[in-house]
Length: 209
Image (cartoon, rainbow, N blue to C red; front, side):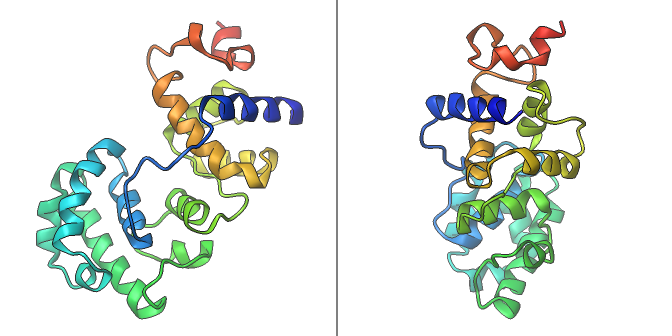
């Protein structure tokens, strides 16, 4: 398994040498907000919404004091806007009252923030703090790692544990970013481009067909 994992990592590095989070942000708390908005929503749509949101409330203090109703209006098209608006304001308030205005750097502290689950926490730890072993289990990751035989099942926490056990810790965050890009470009949920896939030799979708 170790040789297979390393080979897959190298193939993905060739495809995406400089992977970046697709969400646009300039401040640590803006990434936290953008990831919350991305739940059940595309990154592209989030990136269309956040400029107006961040312009309306350009500081953490302003966001923490924002009327939830106005945040709802600004993020309405992201879906689940009432929950997301409330979580954004409450999380920003907690950053100010408990964390000195900074997004915390531990899993335990992040999970205590409103609206922050393990996927969000792992992304923040990897992107903001370069914490080794940060595994972001989104739908792309679960689908593709299952197809490649790197994981089993569809429960995010179980897949996260399986991947954490086999991925080199220093590669895990970038691996997950690359998997997202790969899932959008080639290994799509429907009609994957198997004939163009550099990972097809490991794909159970092809070999079990």
